Length: 237
Picture: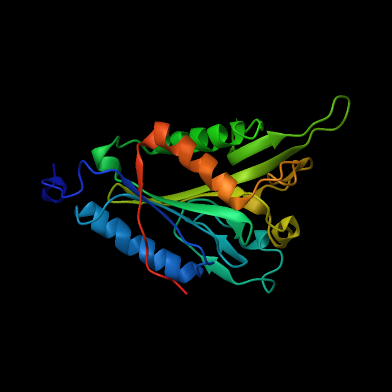
């Protein structure tokens, strides 16, 4: 085992959990994640799960295609080194950045993504929503097909991660009550087939507040990844 993974100060600690109350600019969030992931790798900081919102923006992952950015002047656009294609972030969407050390867990990227999917699905269960996974389509989907009607499936949560030296960062985005029309400036995750769209908890008829969504996310997270302990982060304004 590399020396960096010996005698870690945080080896047996709970996962830190923080909520930013004000929107966080994307570049500031990425810089913080990069630094935190490095500190986690060197055993100098706890693993961290960070709940936040961003101002309206588009991000393009490592697989993003230029033609999927339909309205490049609508919101700021950021290229990012997370996996995936174009996605939208904005108010009413709970972004969760997950910084975990897979070297002390399981060095299995596929398993990690499956655990993220399970976490989201369990969260949706608490609101009586059935979240589903589809081959070839990243994220969590809701089947909205009516008997006798055309197929319709809407995406309710996106997943995009990066792993560096076995520490994860970036994470998930759950649509609580974002402005769904903002997704029209991109082809979300490169998926444009008929019958596929984007939805949210409120769009599905669940009048869920962000605080209620956070409670459900925290409750569903711990059986999958481990216990959380609240911490404070710097003010990013």
